[in-house]
Amino acid sequence: MHRQYLLFRVVMGIAILLMLPACKGGQASGDVTVAPTTLEPLPEELVVPVEIGGPGDFNLPQPGAYLESLSRYQAELLVQFNGEQAGQPVERTTHVTLAYAGPDAQVTRLEISATHEAPIFLLAGQVAGTHFLQSDSDVPCSSLVDSQDTEPSTFGNPWQELPAVYGAELVGSETLNGFETNHYTFDQRAIRWAADTTAQGDVWVTQDGGFLVRYRLTMQVPLGVLSAVSSGEQTWQFDLTALPEDAVLLPEGCAPVLTDFVLLPDAADTLRMPGFLSYVTSSDQATAMQFYRQELAAAGWEEQDAFNANPERTVLFFVRPILEGETVTMQEIATITLRPATVGFKVEVHLLRTEVLPPAEGG
Image (cartoon, rainbow, N blue to C red; front, side, top):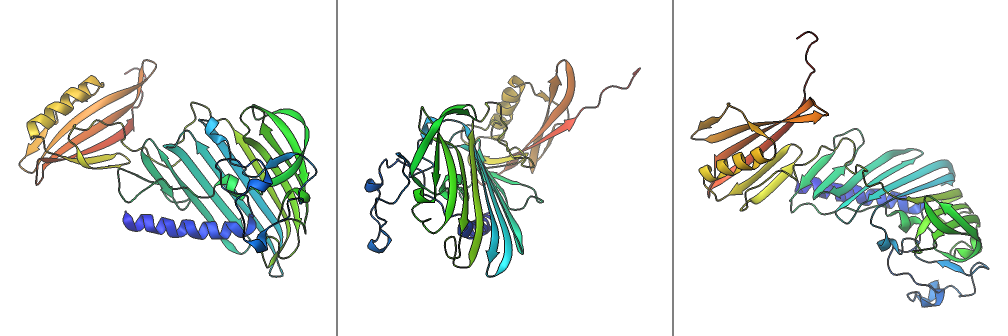
């Protein structure tokens, strides 16, 4: 698992490096700086005169600010570049989607495609204590929990890639994506590093809360602005929407991990994976067997007669029907294996969900 995690960090780093030349963005989210003169000081050679900016009164120095007022949301960013790179035609698309339902429930999906380059796909997140990782859309999603080799993975922050705006002009009030917003417009004058470009943009910010709901920007960029070898047109499209309460964060292809299966109170060295749970207990075998028989019976499981015991292991079998209305459509099968360990026993749980076929007509 440690090697897999290191490999992911390397791949993730490569993806970010490929994405950055096409996305010259603003500052990371955090406390909002209201006026340009209160920004963190820059090196003298990078200082921009404060009079540079658009004619309006609205500033958006940190596009990801004020999100703490939202408990659930989905943010989506699409950045597209069409032009030349090193004298050759090139198209590049970066697509980032973040589904957020709290610090322990968020999934980020990153896709990058470019002319003459291999596409990049990364999916990572955390749901119910489970860390998800997928480095290719054609391979299974890995799921791990309770592992010291994993930590919540974040990459491709959608707001990080949006250029900061200074001096946007108010257009009016609009209801957008379910939020009451103020609509502002701006051009290249409002983007401090874009003096040599032609740009037209719009932002929509909530009237109550002040967070960004929509961002649109189209920029004509000469050589040397986005990168030393690229020139052309780049667009930014960002939208924030509410995440429904019943939204399924578990990504398609990522099997659920047994985060809700009961463990003995003294469980240690726990490992959970899709359909599998293992841990070590200092309890004796009789205590462990009694615990699972009581807990699973209370949760609707029925123990089967196929009890199996020998000096090397003891296996318990349980089945639980899943109803759709009054009809049993699926059933869960759990096997709990107890093996002697250095101290106490090692417990392994295998969980399988199978379809129950309807009874034959006339049967």
